[in-house]
Image (tube, rainbow, N blue to C red):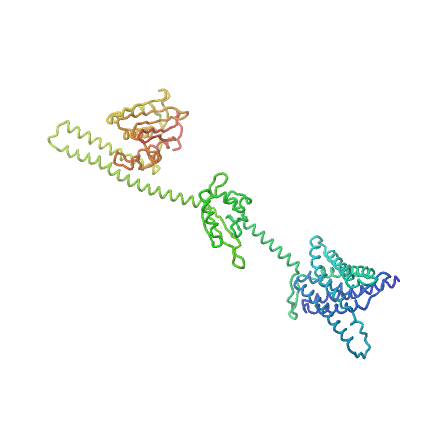
Length: 631
């Protein structure tokens, strides 16, 4: 019995080897002759296995009977399906499955027709061939066909699932086919032999024999796949190539998955690298994605930017207009461009140019929007600066025009006085007192013209950066008292009192500074105060503030409007610009004073109220030793 057992097993193994060799050979030759021959062979296997499953079983032990058709041929057919799926694609595998199903159905119908034919009429059988094959239970064949279809589907799903967890090819194939063949044995037995008394023996035999062949075929097919089958097939010019030479479904899925992953990686890399903010919205305009640069520009996190969250970072003055423009008739929007501002948590304002274009599906319906924001803060600041410079240039032109008109007036007035008085001196009957008066007036007009010319020269030298600072020993009290005595007569003429308040002891009043520029600064301020004060009081002086001397000139004159207080230190500007002929002056005295104060490392400012007077302040370093100056 043992010898018989091993003999039968050897026969089955030999049959399995021959069948596997034939399938693998035809599969290998698919690059030369195509897959048609393999499909035909597997269809022939269906006919043989139907015949053998119906008529021939071998008993190899008391508990096991084996049908070569079911265990050898049918198992090999399922392995062929798995091989086709692994090395070809799902479409080709589907064609094979449908071909096998159709072949089985055709066999079923043919057997049924021939059975009817044999039963209904007399048949002529000269060779006395058995007709038992045509009496096969057709319902069993239909059950087998249904089970074959389920087996084929299971092969694909199980192999895919198992491949996720088991990398080894042999164990993936073995486990897949053990499960599929066990399923086949169980349900085919229950569906076809449920009325048999020895159904348990048939079920047990099917499970043992098919799982045995699963191990045997798994070894052969794994060896073939690892050592004989190549991913790239070489053909020569005498052969032709099957049109279904392609990747397997799984390989296509993996390639597609890798391509998608690569595309996503490249997309994320691109969105992370581009110097503009990128956002994506759904069809309703709700934000669903922003890139890191968008967050950097807006100051919002990705989470806070989603939906309508990004509006919270938009400048309040731009928010309502942006919302209205974004959500008004969204299905009619095409490409949109808009400028608006973001306010970051630290208060920084960022100008951006937002641009969005719609995305469409195959039905030309809008499914969302893709947009960018570009930081244009520098451009906007540049535009604002250009506008400011333009306005300043226009103001400068206006001031220069006013200055030239004023200068014309200022020069003509003393010049006309000089020429007119000189003409009067030619009169022969002038008394000595009249001649002296005319000479004094000519002298005063000449001094006035000289001051104007000196101011023009000074401001020109300052503009050309040709003024140098000369540090020397200066007695502050002597200089202030000298200026008091110098300008008191002018103040008296305007019925104005001029007083001096010196703030430190005599021994501490000697410092090192530029004497000429110091005198010019204080002179310009006192002259300015006298010019704008009628029947009032002017006081000037100084006090020591740490390492600085702070000087002031206070008057009760006309005062300066708040909107003009910064401008009067500009060149060619007067506080009474609207009435520029009302008072004499070129409008450059204060700008000269400001330039000299800054050359001496000081500051100048004023406090004033319109109609109540002004107080001008300036500081210079309180330097008791001779030290180099940066100027």
